Length: 467
Image 1 (tube, rainbow, N blue to C red):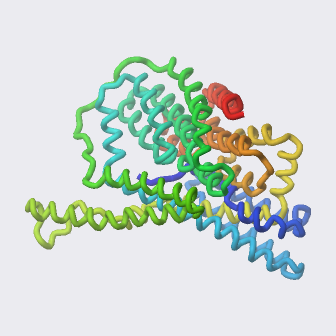
Image 2: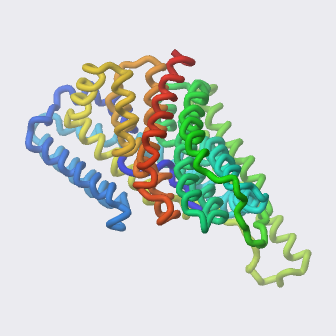
Image 3: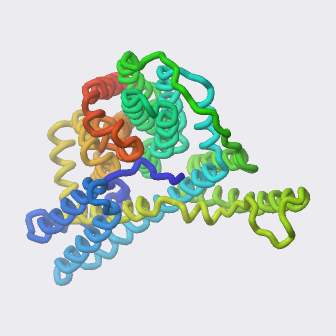
């Protein structure tokens, strides 16, 4: 199983160093009224259109944004050759690349651990346990929702959604209404759960890495996120029957040797990243890469243990390699490379639009005219259409002057706003493919008013508790 961290259409937030370091630089460069600016904006819009149509066109989302990123910076560089600002282009790209490198290696480690845990059968064992416990449809609705909410802060919302969807598909194959409602519940719960943890979503990760909100302060979003999940879940649960599904008897998945230890190593890696950042003031990615060393060293001893067990038990001959060996590099290779390259394309695209001056104008319009509260609420609504990653990337690139209360608000709205539509988050898009015919855009749209009620309730809760 691959990790695809809340992933969907276009990113907009990791250029903060560009906004920090290049803000003074780009004040002398404004191409928003120049034909170069119009062409670059057109490239971005076209690329994003292809990203939205990924499922229909079967075109990987990284391809159009990679092409657009190259074209945008080619036009920018060409326009600055004789302007005296040509050196600023190289500096801006360098800042973008540094930001991308931090995100890339952080996510690569997280993806590697999740793939290793999946390869050891931990997620399959969890799925089988849920299937064969004899729960009713309503109990499974709540169990899969609650587990999505509490698992996504660690495993990310996409991986969590895929696991829980496999459960409801296995037990509700003849009950389309149950599958549809459960998928909606899973998407909402997974997105809400990822909102109160720096590891639950790309948007929260970027906010934490930029230092806008300290690690320990994300927990302030726990109750607002819980409200966002519970309000629509409570309403939808009345449409779920209390009958028990019929499940065929089958062999349960057994966790392979080392599976639980790898889970513990992943938790230790997360704590290492947090401690390195909080105590030593080192970038979180440094702690994650250090934690990857835990897995690599453990894989050596794990393979020796596996090798010894098979040889002493007489299950294989001396030269027989057909045994359950664990290769950490296979887990790295199974990372979601399309997503990682997609992030590169979006960061460079948005960085280019920031260099041109579009983001500063957008920040001035939304945050200057409407204030941070209404602007941040709008960010959540926009993330249902554009996806939270590009929207949040834009907010961080704008770097509006806001108190921590407002940074927490935009983290919450960007995280849970994608639940308003099935296309608003990676979890929703993935489940439309996995539960095809049962969970569709219009199935989700039917319950959007209820989900919107949870969205509004979570914002009110945030101000009541944290304001």
